[in-house]
Image (cartoon, rainbow, N blue to C red):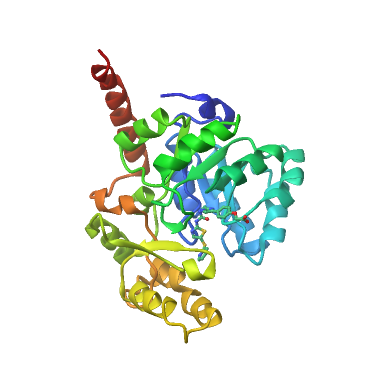
Length: 314
Ligand code: TUI
């Protein structure tokens, strides 16, 4: 199942691991890269020295390429944008905003830039700025999300740009990978599925919550703040949802409520205060396994599905 994106990124399988804040560390990223995908370290709200430390760890754990995700709502985005240049990181993905301000410097440094977008407009803009590829992420995804579903977004982005498109949001098994290819994507980005691989170091409670989740167990909150977030339903999302629809609660109060909620989910497994971000595919995730086994199974299944597709054509 080699595609164009494998050659561009120097990887065996056309899969990128999502740059999940607090989750995507050196342990997870190196495991994914060692398995033949593209592992990603999330810069999230790290400052330059914290990010550099994680990059150093990852370099010690793999000799394969790995990338860094720059989250554009981060207060440290300027300094971490420079770290990826200094550290000669081969691939940068971005999320939660418009990366155009940094793209010229990254591209000049030889970095391949793959912005995560949630609309055709943003896809076209980053293409104009020289993006190597785009990740088109649908509303089924976990964390910060756009409005449009993967099924509608991916083909529209494929029609809108000439650069390769990687599909994300709602992909959790080989059927999803096969469907993404049928929509025109040349690769996939998965996040939620990586939450339960052995090398993912999140709190046990987080993994258990994903493994127990049913199809309708996620909810999107925070639309009022302009950055909706999908997470597993919990006491935290229940309270947040109530406040979001209460006109007496200010946006500032809402922001304060959300701040730090992902960190306590990931590090402390706090069932009351934690925001357990996950995509709608959580309901399909039932087993823990090494990243390598997961990726190999994913593509073996996708291949099988695609080989069987000719039965639909007479
Ligand atoms: O970025 C993500 N997922 C994330 S970021 C994150 S950290 C966070 N925590 C709490 C609140 C907000 C963020 C958790 N999960 N996915 C990629 C993604 N990017 N999804 C949607 C977008 C996006 C949205 C707007 C990309 C560009 C964009 O442009 C808006 C504009 O015009 O600037």
